[in-house]
Length: 169
Image 1 (cartoon, rainbow, N blue to C red):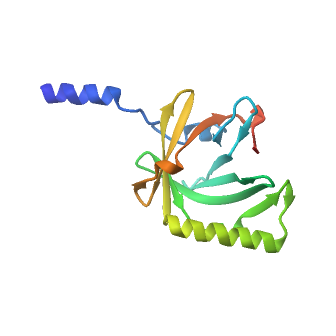
Image 2: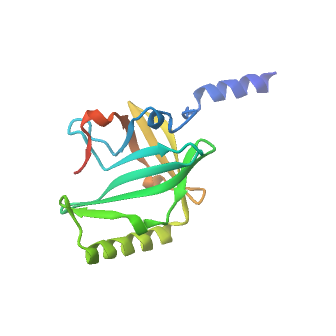
Image 3: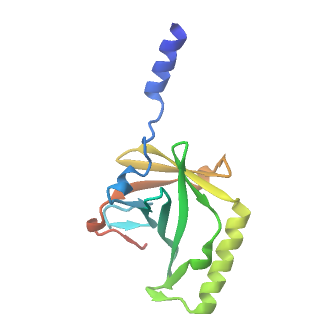
């Protein structure tokens, strides 16, 4: 009986994870990574689409460099597994790059794609992200191939598409 009471007590103080980590996305909200609420900026914005067959697609807009501003846009399939959002660290063939708001020329885009692909290959094959409450938002905790990577953790907040957030420094 004491062990059952202890288990309930520990569960009460354990960090709470959302039942559906993509619940706000299902309601049309966007995920703003590394937000600056005062300036309405994000280091990355993720949106999700949900197909009738259950597949989930993550459309990401990621700042790769602040000056010149280099932004990558890519789409990746993801799954929700054990309360985490998981996706492959591959598949950058369709990534689109802009530099200071203009499309990157084909040679520069291919160079960026190659550099990112090489960096991802060194990290591993799959990233999973768990979300735990942190202040007014969430902490996105990264796991690469099942191993925690606290160096990749970042704050996240859900925003409305009409809130005016954008990916920029």
